Figure (tube, rainbow, N blue to C red):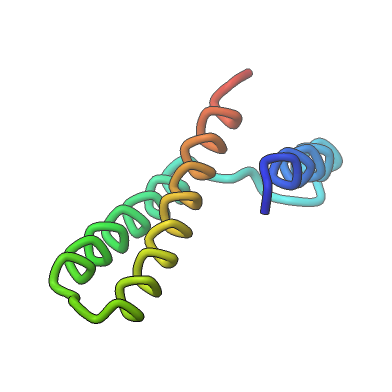
Length: 84
C-alpha cells in the first residue's frame, strides 16, 4: 500500500470519526502496535544474521522490509493523529 492509499484511508477515517461512526484511535494502542513491530524487526534481524541459506535470507529480507514499512506508517499515523 502506497502513501496515497494510506492518506486516503486516514481521510476516510477522519470523516467517519466526525460523523461518530467510529471510535478514535487511542495513542496507547498505536504504541502497542509499534512495540510489537519493533520486536518483530529485531527478531528478523537476528534470524537474518544467523541464516546462511540464500533463499531463506531473501525471504527474511522481504519480511524485514514489510515490517519496516509498517513501522514507518505507524510513525506517520501517530504524527497525523497528534496534529490538531
